[in-house]
Structures are given as structure tokens and as C-alpha cells.
Amino acid sequence: MKNEAEAFMSALTTLKLCWAIHKSNEAVRKCAGLLKRKFKENLAYEAMRKIESSSSPMLVITLAEWELGKLNRDEPLSN
Image 1: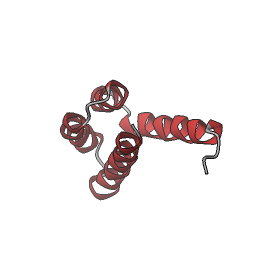
Image 2: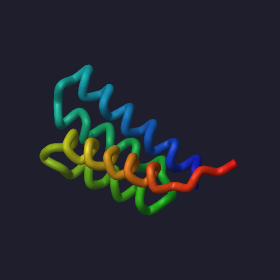
Image 3: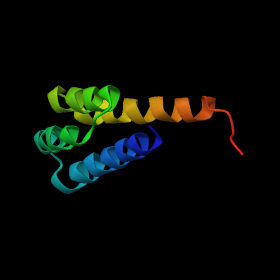
């Protein structure tokens, strides 16, 4: 599961880079459509699907990052 979470964070970074290069919601949606095929976990796949179908994919990406940050703060420290 941890590898899947890391892959998801990497995918979000890729989508932000796509936006920075192309400045196009359509380009971000197409990239999300390609990236969603890489995920086996339902949550990551569904998040990519939401980004792909959103009229404002950067907002969805920002919310996903915020939610992941919230989850990371709630995790207990492991030794």
C-alpha cells in the first residue's frame, strides 16, 4: 500500500508538471487518463478518474494533496 501511495503522489506531481508545461486542463485530463491505468488500488484509480473527468482538474489535484497531507499528519510515527 505504501508503494501505491508513493506512486500516487508521483502521479500528482506529474500532473502538476503537465499543467505547468501545457497550461491546459485538457492536457491534464488526458495525462490523468493515462496514469489511472497504472493503479491497482481502487482509491488511487478513482482519484485519477475524477481528475480525468473534472472541469477543474487542478482543484481536484490540490484537494487530493491536501487530503493526503491530512492523512500523513494523522499517522503514528513508526520506529
